[in-house]
Image (cartoon, rainbow, N blue to C red):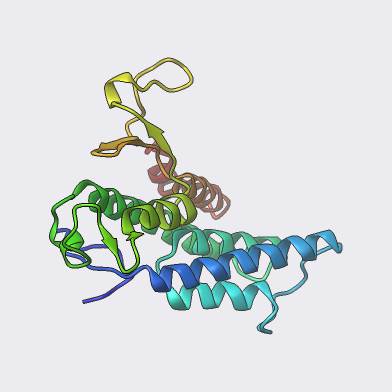
Length: 214
């Protein structure tokens, strides 16, 4: 099975990077279009034309329905042009946070399984290369962790990595065979925006559930 859906609880998954690449391409096109519109004095109401941010965000989610950064940036766009209700935007941010958490788990699990069935399904080499020497691990890092999740490689052994305040690593930092990775910036932003919008909707108890993570 080939899917771009977050993994099941048992970690049984296979996925392809091609739809993810197409999805991220549309995210970048949407972001550029938004920037150009702002530079010209405003975004205005969304349009379904092939040159609009709305079109590119929808195409992004068509290729990868659980793309965290696409959901988060689409919600930002809707919020900026006032084209959705607070409840609708809140749901978009909540989905972004959920998908970011799941994809981070999936990507790091994939990187940590040097001899897993997922890797063996792509290649028999220990370096996880396919085709003309393509390193799948590097694509997972660049496309999913860095691109879609805003997760950064911190480096080294977890016992020797401190944060800016000189304390031990954050609970959200994860160590695997490749080193230590940060929490997801996309998830953090989406959780904050979810809590903010829930508070505006007077759903304060629900907002607190998102803030408890921090």
